[in-house]
Image 1: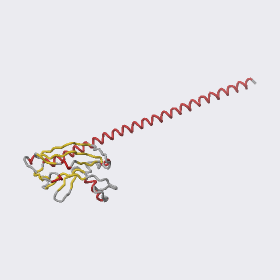
Image 2: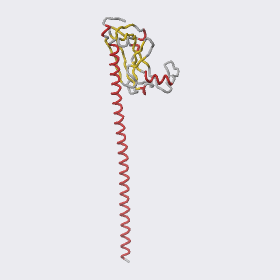
Image 3: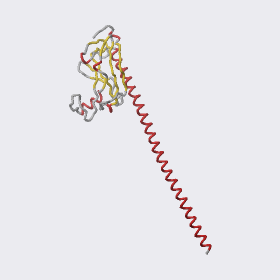
Image 4: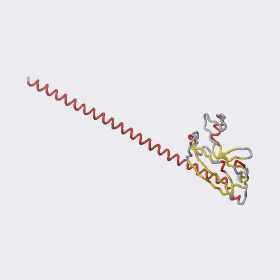
Length: 216
């Protein structure tokens, strides 16, 4: 009889110990899962922040490179001008010794494909939109037929950027061509009214070595 009583007490104690150990194990497991989940969220957030910072830094460097290349190309074109004349409101026109053509620098405004509108509000055809994708930015405009050739091709800019300058401030004085507000924009931002340039140069002065003493 005593043996049965002792065995019953022993079994109850054993069951309590098992439940206690099981409860601790479950609690520890839940705590571990919670910690892991919180760690994963923190790590994921950190990785996202790092990726975002890296992307912004890379994009800034790319835009600065496009600006530097654009400035170099503008300098090459204008410094070799053989003659210059007034282009009225469109700025100075110059004769290129390289191509044997009269031309000027101009800007083809970027128009995003898909529902884009021309400056007069008219809908732009898909064909024009595709064509504009390749021609947008600072261009050499041939005066003989109005053809505009981008200084820096869309492919050279990875299809990401478009360039511009203040055409109203484009001028010639004292054997120098002067351009202001040369900007590089990300195409994805151009539609925003408050779009800020990804890279900017206040002013560029290019001396044309062949035009010393020549006025418009």
